[in-house]
Image 1 (tube, rainbow over the protein chains, first blue to last red):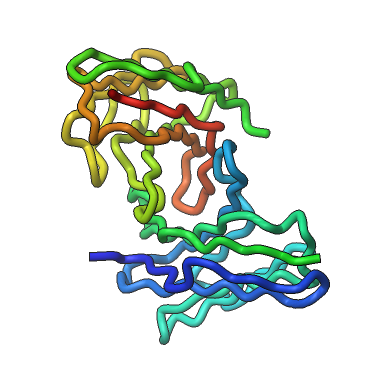
Image 2 (image 1 turned 45 degrees about the horizontal axis):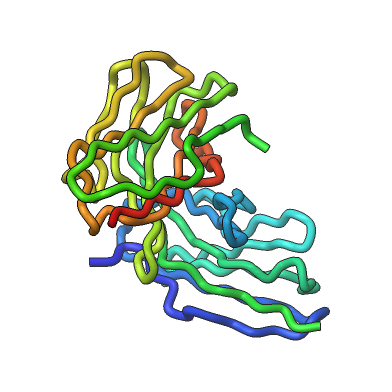
Length: 112
Length: 113
């Protein structure tokens, strides 16, 4: 029973265009959401997060949107660059000492 | 980069042998975690620690044990390795507080033949 779902295993985008990565969750107790980026042979790198009291958080080219009623979040990358090519993981957790739950990842390829 | 070192980075061993993976941090963070990453499964939590000698099980803890005798070190042990434990293992750390991101080491690739 997957609590965090990334339904697109892969995504290809042209350089300079917008990349939109999607994530759905089922647990209404989740109140903190994160995106990680992972290159081959490296550990995941924290990108951006959002708490449930907000619906948008922006950091440079990266913006995360949260729609609590739909239990959906998305990561927008604008403009996309070839160096953004990586696997992106969505993760979520509840309050207190609860563990992160990860989605299975989406592989983004940015084509020059 | 967060000061997290995993050792060894690669290991090949045989079924039935004991294996210990080490995670060392220099950030003095309270929380430490062990994950495994497998194709089609993303990252799954094995065990985590919320302080010295304080540990708890994660989603896929069977066949694994952990120990944390010092703040900076978190050990993952496979008492008798099986081929199903072939995977990439990641350690992560985080500060106290509900809304703190975890930061990951670069992983250990473990192959059990």
